[in-house]
Length: 149
Image (cartoon, rainbow, N blue to C red; front, side):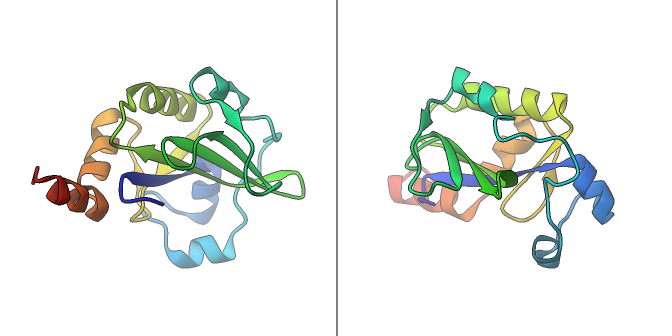
């Protein structure tokens, strides 16, 4: 991840419910639970992404990449042809409004949660998501380097 990116995890809400998590995940939750196995999530579940991010080859055959790793992207990690993890990287130097709106709608319609870098499940609205980005250490550092603090 670059200083100009913020990473979110996308997790099925049913998995959070099974864990008994409402807002905050612990590191042990990631280490002791297999996400994405309790639903019918085919490898092309995120194919709609091609409307806003181009599908690109990844460095790994086990990762489906939409967008570019250096900018806005969604990475779907596969394990035995099942989704095992989904991350979204937002490049806050770009106009990421379309990606953000798509992400909010997609997560809402498919009962998915968006988890920030502090392991907090965010409310699915632009204000909460932008707040998480703008309060991150990397965002603040980039603004400091640009002289915009």
